[in-house]
Image 1 (cartoon, rainbow, N blue to C red):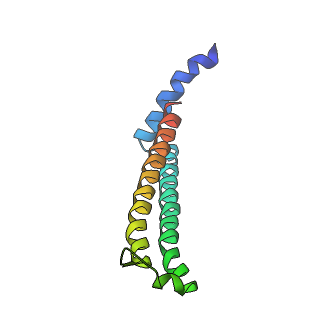
Image 2 (image 1 turned 30 degrees about the vertical axis):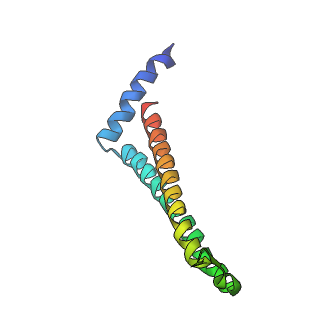
Length: 111
């Protein structure tokens, strides 16, 4: 019974700590910013690796550079058609994960 009464007090205290930017609130916000930054760096590196792998593959296997599809060189076709879905997918995943991080933060503050 006592624990049930303290839960309400804890919700108010956690919100106040974030709103008043106490040390605990600042630590919680730094954790959220760190999570968002880590997510952005990981997904950015993934996109760079995927997009840079095409020229790397063409450097290792130069015969692919001579292939044409519908009169367009394969490297241009792959880079032209691959870049946009990779960037779009990366942006979509980032948005979903960033929203999840923010929801986890909100749930932590509301607990």
